[in-house]
Length: 213
Ligand SMILES: [Zn+2]
Image 1: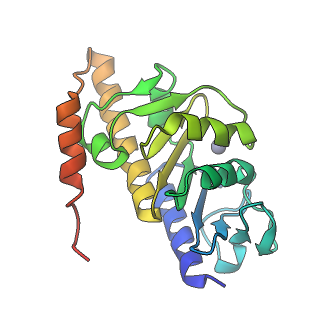
Image 2: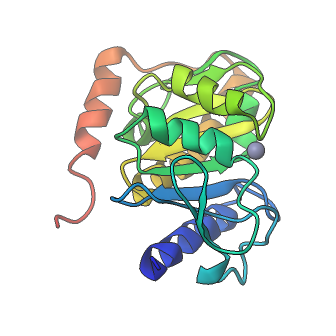
């Protein structure tokens, strides 16, 4: 069941691994099917060599539909997010070092470069500490997303969301690029922050990015 979509999940997981957003088997990738089933990466398994059969399928209540491996330990949080945000059909959770570092020095990742606004739709909030693999992680994500495509979990990592895996992937990867630039500037002085108008402009321009379908 869902072999094409399972391959998309694995491909996305490899992309975040290759982009340096996770190490070993950290983080997770999941997507929601139109019928409500959720595909989620298994717990503690290396993304390299991951096969379609390794992806676990659960329903919105967490009941197992398919798969023999244990699903990601964060599934309880992921299900809460899917339940409360019907427009979200893909979630990527990483421990990406630079964006996570931004979360240690403030309560918001300001829109300092267009790259961030392009993919997250503006400044990214930092949610207070919550335990990994807890329902609280899902609750804080929903509370702090504020209509954006990412939230930083203080002392932990990042949750990126989207209507599809590509949207969530772009948010996670470009947010990390933006975090590197922001932290480099911060190390040398006080970074300039984009105005709301400039931020909205970057969001609008990005809507026409890429190939027309
Ligand atoms: Zn985590």
